[in-house]
Structures are given as C-alpha cells and as structure tokens.
Length: 101
Image (cartoon, rainbow, N blue to C red):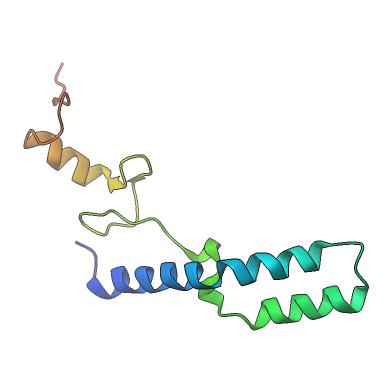
C-alpha cells in the first residue's frame, strides 16, 4: 500500500490540473499563434509560467485505484499488476484464471 500522503498529493495535482486546464490551453494557444505580435506571445508565456507547476498535466502520475501503487499500472483497468493478480486469484475477475504449465 502506498503512503496516504502520496495518494492525496496526486489527487491534489489532479484537481489543480482540472481547475487550470482551460486557462492553460488558452495561454498556450496565444503563445503558439504566429499571427500575434511577439510581445503579446511573450506575455502569454510569462502568464503561463506564473501558473502553479502542479497544474500541468505532465506532472500527473497514474496510480492503482486499489493500492495506490505508482508502478506496473494497467491503464485500461486502472489497477496495478499486483492488484490484478490478487483479484484474479480470489476469483473476482470473470473469465480470468491463473495459468499453469
């Protein structure tokens, strides 16, 4: 099980990303628009830099919904490989059986 503080930090980051997503997208579009004057694009870049770092989507890290584990994460299932194996061993995933050869 991951530390609770790390899970909460990730949730806080996700909330910040959601809060600033629209503003961030508008500033990025302004900064990338070549038809605007250079000063205006530069001001947009400065405003973008003043936003909180944790509001950037690249700072998010996927975590397992069950254990909070940050590594070995299956995106489609939103759980880690260890949690997947545990659920499969207990027969809680339909159609999945432990293989043996």
